[in-house]
Structures are given as C-alpha cells and as structure tokens.
Image (cartoon, rainbow, N blue to C red):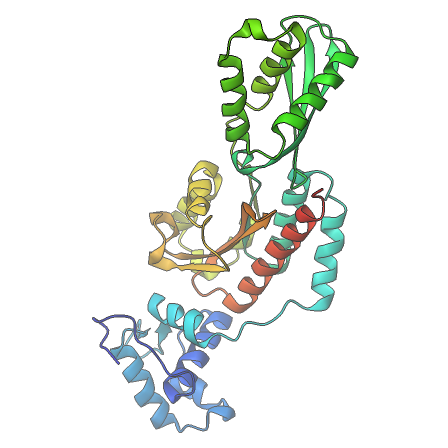
Length: 354
C-alpha cells in the first residue's frame, strides 16, 4: 500500500487493517472523540490483542488514514479514511420497513403538487437522517411538455397551465393583446398540445418562434394568437426551487461548536443559489454520490460531507435529493435514506405519466 503522500490506498476488506479502520470509524461516528486501541480491543469479533491493534493503527496513520490530535490521545479518521470507508468498507443498511412506510404515507398526501411533494420529502429526509436535507425540485427546462391549457381570468388576462409528462404542473398569468373567448382558448390549448406536445420547453419555444417567424399573413387570427400565446407560455427560465430543512440539527453537534464555523456554514445553507450550483454538478451522475470534507468545492463545506442522488421520470433527471452533515456522519444510513427518497420521488412522478 502507498504511503500517506501517495494515491488513495486500497484496503483488502477482509484484512485486519480494514477491521480496525472500520471499527475506529464506527466508534468515532458514534462518539465524536478520538478512539484508542483499548476501546478497539474490547470488540471481541476482531480477535486482536491491544498490541496488534496499536501496530495496525500506527500503520493506518502512516497511510494517512488516521491522525492523532494529541500524543496521549487516541486517533481519529482523516477525510481519506472516510473516503476509503465509504468506497471499500461500508456495509450499507436498508431503510427499515416502518420508516419506509412513514415516508411513503407522508409523501402520498403531497403528490398532487410537485413543490409540496419536494418540501415534504425534505422534511422527512431531515427527520429520519437528523442531518440537513436538500431537495432540488424539477428544473423546468428539463421537462417534456404533455399539454397546455388556458383559462380566461378576465378580458385582458389568461392563466396558462403547463402540464409535463412527469406530472409537474406550472401555472403563469399572461396578458392578452386582444380578448379571446373560453372556446377559443380551449381550441388554442388543443392545437398547441397536439402540435408541440412531447418537446422540452426549450425545444417547444424554438419551434414556436420558428413558426412565428414565418410569413404571418399565412395564418388566420386564431392561429397567430395560438402561436403567440404558446410562445409566451413556455418562455420560462425558472430553475428548480431548493428546499432546505433541518439546519437546527447542526446546533447540537460538537463538530460545529466553533461559532465562526457554524455561522459560516449556516450562511452557506441560506445561499440557495450556491447550493443549487453545487447540486447541479451532480445532476449527470448516477447512483448515490458522496462528497467528503475537503472534496467539497465550497470552502465553508470542507468540514462537512454531502450525500446526494438524483431522481428522474420518463428517463430524464428532474432534480436532486441529499443531506449535508459532519464528516463523521453515519454514511450507511444517510446513503440508504437518500437512495430511498430518490426512488420514491422517481416512482411518484413517473406514475403520473400518460
């Protein structure tokens, strides 16, 4: 195995190095305190003497996987140790059936409105993980349009209702250049849905602009109104809203007892634009992604870890769910919960497709 200055070491999951490192990480996650050889030696299943454990811990320190805060103290895992633990040693648990049922029931009550669904998902993820939960709602630019509807509010205004194939519904109010009757609005909605349904918003916008660019005299009044109304209905730049829940979970953790560190972290969690950018980097990744400590690009998150996964419908990624917590978070549980929530959201949104 390479030294601590080399590449990340590979550890045989069946070796005593793996057994000791796994136990040190487990105890450190549980207590937040340095772990001594005596505490590790009390784990009977390891079958190692205190002297053997001290030797192994010294070798793990040489590999850059453990550090010793004080000469008389035990050792703590480094960021690299947690990386090895997550990639090579972790036995990920499954979400308990009772918890899965509770999450499912909570989300079922909100499935009709996507924003409500994502908000409830963030609350449930924070509740069960005891970390800060992040849920990025669908980015409208990624949605495939199923159909458009228009509802007359008054002679000068209409509500455009955009329904995506994933079940996402978006409403916006548009001014009318000339009055249109409810029957005319119904005909416009049917025409636009039949002609342009199945396209993403950018594709639909481009197609409508192309049609409008043709000789306008070729279209009658209602056709011209249809194209103009459709173009304005899909002229959306909105990115997915970010739901953040459970920042108060950080207050009781010794990892953030430094008030300056805590304030900086809370400011970052309030900066939704920054967090959306962070989650956006994971949007093309598959499976559960784990970003540990200094792997984070945001300086205020280098004392934290992020566990995240995307959810999708119709083969398209819609958004991201994740948790932020201390580097010593219980990764197995966090990964299991994030994976479960992403699957539930994917299923609920996919089940509304036509």
